[in-house]
Image (tube, rainbow, N blue to C red; front, side, top):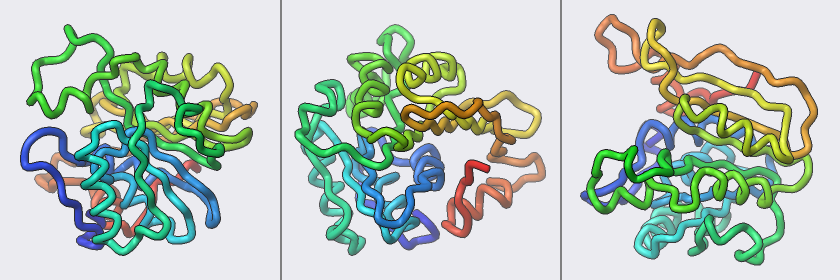
Length: 238
């Protein structure tokens, strides 16, 4: 990841960090000195990429799968960031208070995309935990809302067709929404959305220009996305 600056050991089969993790990390805008938590960090794809992008920031990842915790901890050490990146074995659906941690300045997450098993075409068994939210999206948004202080930020990447659900759930105690659609091509609908909210924020919602992943000229990614993936630019909220 990030043009080779981050090396990630992942399972040979099952869920693997990819584009969503890279974009989520690029959208993390925590200030130097901030404490940031990721809900459901897996083996640390987004967590470590965000840590490299924000060298003055401390990160904590929460993950319920013991093997993923082991790999994420080893990945942090292998990439030389173990002093400011810790991984905690915990279940998001048990709630933030169950962790016994003080609230954070910011939180980010790539929650499981599905609540209903009937919506999901049977994946590799190792992917089920990453794709299926047993407690639904509400459990994840509830965790994130409790995890940050007043004025803290919450950043989420999710399916575009769940945007209304995301806004409804996060809007219980957060506001000042900024939304960036993510489109496969300039002439196709968004498949993903990045959403940033501020706990107790009151500013009007802002819909930002979309991020277009691919062009139709034969390139794998647009120049903007290539620069993001290499770590040469971030995804701003302006």
